[in-house]
Amino acid sequence: MPRLRPHRFPLPTVSAVLALLVLTAPARANEPAPQGAVSVQVDNAKVIRLPEKTQTVVVGNPMIADITLQKNGVVVLTGKSFGTTNLIALDGKGAMLAESTISVQAPQASIITVQRGLDRESYSCTPNCQPSVQLGDATKYFDETSKQAEARRGMATANR
Image 1 (cartoon, rainbow, N blue to C red):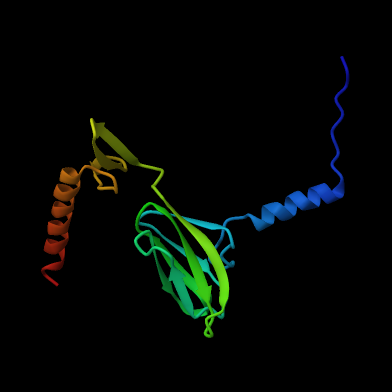
Image 2 (image 1 turned 135 degrees about the vertical axis):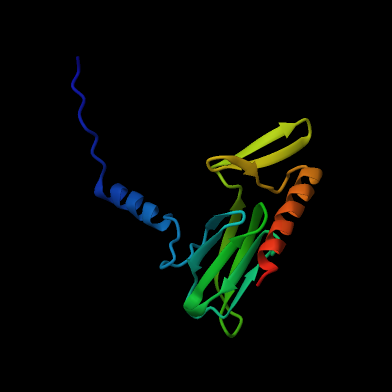
């Protein structure tokens, strides 16, 4: 039986792979937003950092994502609807400082989808299943569940 020898990679190859991993790491609040894609779940927010000289931030399609510019280039990005759009950061003179793609995705955990023919209903199961309207649910289910949630919010804020 032949002996297997470990394969050794030349140092430039290892360095290139490490550099690629560092350059493609996900954005954190204290790091600049990548020039690639930023992902956020619908109905969730994410804090990203743009260049400090950022004065204006533009979102290509505000129906997909919303942004709030804070101090020193910090941006709160909120996913509003499924899809992809872009974000552009401009300085005080209108020069482009950064551009990123924004991808808004469905939540991955705890949402159960019930399909009845063409009609769809979504439930949040954490730990008990309760109605949780999602984009794409049947109109009747969406409207009825939304009305109940709105009535409940109204009762909660009526005494304030």
